[in-house]
Length: 152
Image 1 (tube, helix red, strand yellow):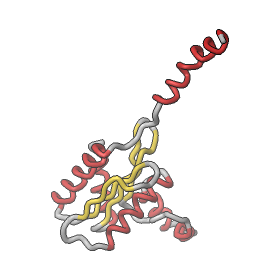
Image 2 (cartoon, helix red, strand yellow):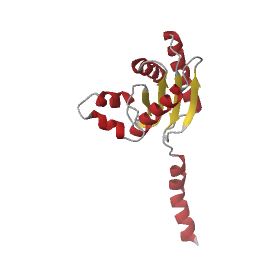
Image 3 (cartoon, rainbow, N blue to C red):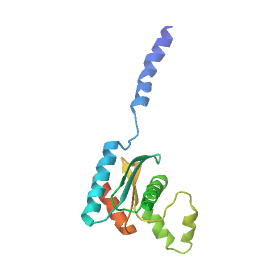
Image 4 (cartoon, rainbow, N blue to C red):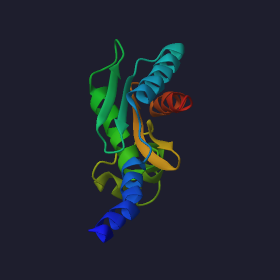
């Protein structure tokens, strides 16, 4: 019995450490701050946008559809954010690859939207989510996405 108690006391700190050692993650507060910055940039430029924030698993934390933006931009922004989080890179990378010889193969990748406007959100070297923007040109979408991440 004494040996069992000693073993429990020896290993107990390991169990506590395992439960408190969490990976970084994206909070609702983080998503709101990023969305606010993206919306502010969009309004300053006179662009109506859809702003989507996903967590590391590709699940939606927030979605904003500004007045006057086409509803098709909802799915496009979501697709851009999914691409950025699933592949851990900006969607601009895929857009640029499409312009190279043989780049059309990118179109066959599942969940790959090859249009600028999706960026992964990284904290402490870990992808914790993504932002997807749609509503204007792909370059303008990218500008708004970058403005959103600038506050994170």
